[in-house]
Length: 148
Image (cartoon, rainbow, N blue to C red; front, side, top):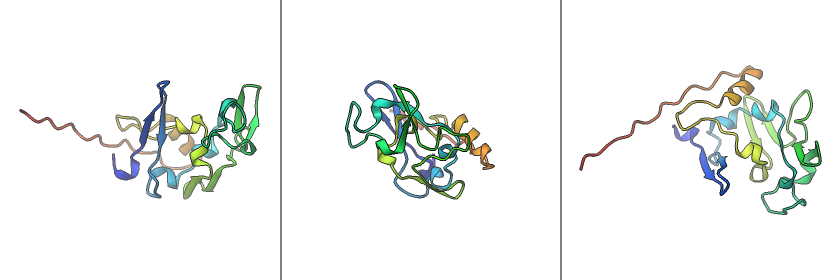
């Protein structure tokens, strides 16, 4: 993967993999934002600040709506014209999450590329909905073997 397309994978104790993007503006997500403006972002209500946890990483309660006693959604994503309340920028030009370190597990688990360099089909769907070009498959570096 190019440095601009690298994702930082953080494996959780329960087996889930959270994805962090490099802290720069060269990553593909910094010029996209389609996913933030296409999908409903719903997640377990226990991730909301003031619920079961008050961690510094909990989703701020003023950014969510409750959709059931167990699930919450980011404001702006549970409607026909989706725009996450935490999305800042312009789709296809510049984008970032105003609560990136406090984003929900749904967002943390959303990846752009898999280990084989294939784009996430959901990412491609969101990009297409906003008339953005599909992401290409990334070349995967061949493993070099050294003989002893």
